[in-house]
Structures are given as structure tokens and as C-alpha cells.
Length: 217
Image (tube, rainbow, N blue to C red; front, side, top):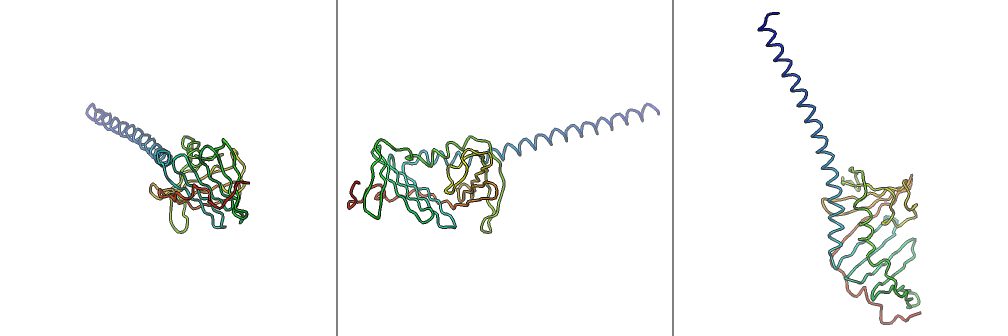
């Protein structure tokens, strides 16, 4: 092989090797960026919701299942109201003045749990536990519409049904429509609970008042 042909061959091989190296580098950069964007999207959604509710003095957070179970939580500054219907049984609590009041509608009475406001920040406390955990992302169709979700392991803070707490077998999925949380699904084995979510920033202030015709038990 003459010198000229040898130079051309070496140039071609060098070009091919360079293109292969560039291709490999771009492949890893693209994959890393893709993973990073997926991660950032999930963190941004949960963190955004947590920060929004954490800084909101007034909001409500409502969960509803197809079976008729329902939980309504409302917060206004240092007061909260919780109304839960589960298996056709209803419980109501008002939290204010550092106390929790359990209302019994049938007898128009209430019970006072002094120096107890454990559930005052129920929703933001649950989101705070979740927002920094590792997660999986995906998309799922619910009622003929595809939603982005992020899935967390081990927490049951938003479940209404009976699931094993702090278990690696329990998964919780948060479904978003753009930046709005619309569904929460809890999964354990073959058992699933899907809850529709409604968040509002308009709350009836009368919810935080014990009715005037109720007497302390």
C-alpha cells in the first residue's frame, strides 16, 4: 500500500472512531438528562403542592371513593375541620384553641380532647413525609384520560381503607393533571383504593364553629 492510500485510510478510521466516541458521549448525556427531567418533574409536583398548601392560610382537601367513602379536611390558620364518612359511619372533628372537639350529631353533643391538635396539619404533614422520598414515575389511564403519576413506597397517610403501614408492599400513586392533583391510589398486592381529589382555597368559616345547640358531654 502506497503512502497516500495509507494516509487516507488512517484519516477515515480516525473519523469513524471520533464519530463513535461522540455518539456514545451524546447517548449517555441524553439518558442522564432524560432521567434528571423525570426526577425533577416528580419532585417539582409534590414540592409545589406541599409548598402551596404549607403557605396557604385557608384551604380544603377532599377525598372521595367510588364506594361512597369520603373525607373532607378544611384548614383556616390555626383551626381545622375533619368530616369523614367510612362504611356509612360519619365522624366529625373540630380543632381549634389547642383542643380537638369530637361532634356527635345524633345526640347533639361534643367531647373535648384538651391540649390535643394532632391532626391540625394532617395534609401538609403527610405531604412533607412523602416529598423527599424516592419514587417511580409513569402514566395511567383513569376514566379515559391519561395522567402522569409518581409512586411512593411504604406510606399510607392518604389512604382511607385498611392498608399495612410502613410496609414495602404498599405503594401510593399521586396523579396529576398538569400541576393539579386529581387522584390518589393506594396499592397493596391485589387490593387497590382509588380516591378522587378536590382541593379548594374557599372554605366556609362556619365549619370551625361548634353548633350553638350542641352541649358538652
